[in-house]
Amino acid sequence: MKHIPQSIAANPRYTKILQDKQVDNTLQKAYIGYCKEQDYYDNFNPFMQEELALNQRKNIESCDDIEAQQDIQAQDLQAFERFNATHKAMLDSMLHQQTDIESARKYALAYWDNLLRDKKQKWLESMKEKLKEQYIQAIKDFLDYLLSILETLLRVYGLCGIKKPNNDLALAQILNEAKQSFDMKQLCPNTYEESDIETNGYDYSKGHKRFINFKEINAFIKHIQTSKDLRKIAALLGREEENGNKKIEHSSIDQSIKTHNHKEEMSGVTLGRDLANLLPQELAMLKDENLELLFNLKYIQNRLFCFEKQGYETIQKEHYKMAKNEGAMIICVDTSSSMSGNREYLAKAITLFLATKASMQNRACYLINFSTDIETMELSGKDNARNLINFLAMSFNGGTDVAPALKEGLKKMQEDSFKQSDLIVISDGCFGDISQNLQQKMQDQRHKGNRFYLLDIDDNGDEKTFFDTHWVYDTQTQKAQVLYAMGNRI
Image (cartoon, rainbow, N blue to C red; front, side, top):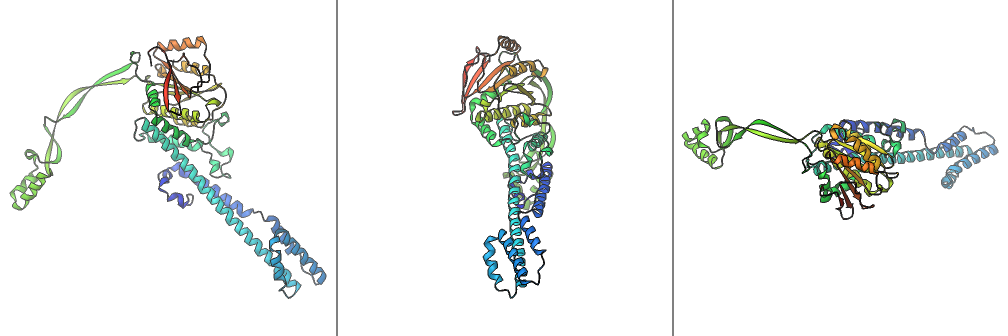
């Protein structure tokens, strides 16, 4: 495969991801652009003016007049020196060895021609080698970028208690969206022009980045992994409350299970030393003195073939599960400029963790980004991967106003799938109070089973009493403490 450099194809780190058809198509397109750039250097070089000057001197014919011929040669050498000053002395010494002025001129022009050809070849080899190094590095960056996404997701799956992604289609979708967020011009500038980049509907003019810093996000995923407090807060969202406001669906089914005490039906063959259920060929060994020793050895080792028998009994199994509208999450993330940096990466890591957990548990999840305006995204359903990647690519800027986000959250709670949802605001706490009218609407929703939480990163504000619980999280100590709790409902 010409489009994949040997050093990359031979690297076991990239073996699996190179098998992805879309990744391969992307690299093929990059290779076409790479070849075009090589062709460009074949047809363009920084010696074109010198080449033109040389051709002009070649087109001037020699003459019989000695003085005129000497003048022509002097002009040849003057033109040569303009481009090759360091080689002038060498050429002069060689010209003294020529027998006549005509031979000297031919030698000078041939020397210049060879020197120019050598300079062009060395330059071309240097540029192509540099281009090759850049191409290989760009491909490595692209593949490492995709692998960093997988590493981050696998870490999140681990936090969610899932050892391995069980939805290859969803994972493929996430990778596909991630490919769109990568600046493909880095692979080949002459191929991936601005107008050619497919963005799948993303509006990067609203503060979105083309490249997601998964290295930083992954670092804060590890942050969550080591922080018991953050995991406890995440586990609280959408769980069953003790007051019984949340509904539980109950069902029962009849199920046959195997029993160990009652063996009624033959179910197969197994290894053991159950003499009552030996296969006939095993018993036959006892009739042969030569095979009796083998029988005894197999008996000691539990290696005799025996009939396996199994009994069954019917039991009634009870099933309890959350109703479809249970466990839903509404995540409000402060995307103001004061959140940029580590707070931004932590907010993205927490959101990625919560959204992944919700997806794996088939729970509805809704994201509200807020600064002075709001932007909403469904993180459940067919577009969840696209929207999540879109959020992770977002840059944080602007002011802070939490009220529009809370209003949107209250509106969402009226939908069937979010009637019993919990809402969490992830912010640095740099916002003021909200209106009494909005606080009353939040209180009305509490009576319907909804809860409102605030995770304040690095404690930059006063306690917010309109939330059920206001946590303050210190990114240095990785500890969270309750700054305010409404009554005993935590």
